[in-house]
Length: 251
Ligand code: PGA
Image 1 (cartoon, rainbow, N blue to C red):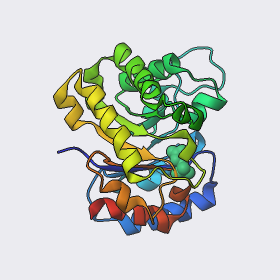
Image 2 (image 1 turned 90 degrees about the vertical axis):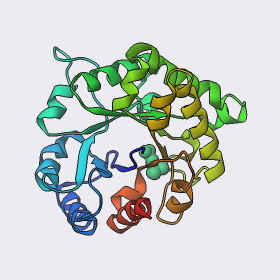
Image 3 (image 1 turned 135 degrees about the horizontal axis):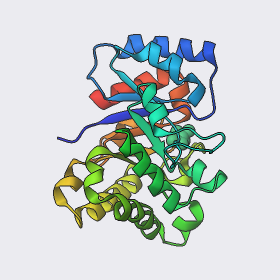
Image 4 (image 1 turned 135 degrees about the vertical axis):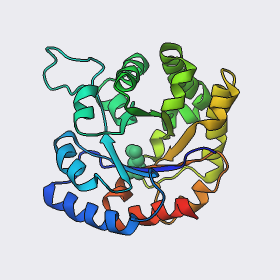
């Protein structure tokens, strides 16, 4: 059976006090629910305090980016082995905000994916089309390119130790969620694309949906056969909303 997962992406939000309050509620409300179904990906400076807070709980943690380089004179960068020092399980790779604001193209994303896996981190590989690309009818082509650049570099086997997140760019932070059918259609496409390489890996791959997931729409999205959970931005900063979305996964 495929693993189901809900991951919070805190983006560049939070501070020590707010994080503490948020995690207190999440930890106590999710205690006792299934292990390794939940994670939060936090800004680098908070990894140490989040690690202290979440170790010995059923919530994992991770980062939102990683350098493609292992070490060296790369001012401002953070390596995968550094993330390991703080017990990270996951790292988000190729989020559309990294692609559009920080110039990460498919090749850089693939290099980061490889760097993460070389340190046994589980990459959460984000793929998704912009509104303009959807309107031009090239959604599948864009996603295919994003996916295949990684598969060509890292091999299809690498997907056994990775998670994919379909995040339509037009749905991120906009309040516009893809309908369950729109999301399902792309999830099937992603699974079939993997299936052309290896049918078993395709069946086992966890594919999350991200883009304005809320407590009110999580259930209908997660009920779709090829949606295995969510990558949650804004709603992951509100403890009750994040807990409600996590609970949806158990239903
Ligand atoms: P959102 O963000 O839930 O705020 O739309 C999702 C994401 O960017 O991962």
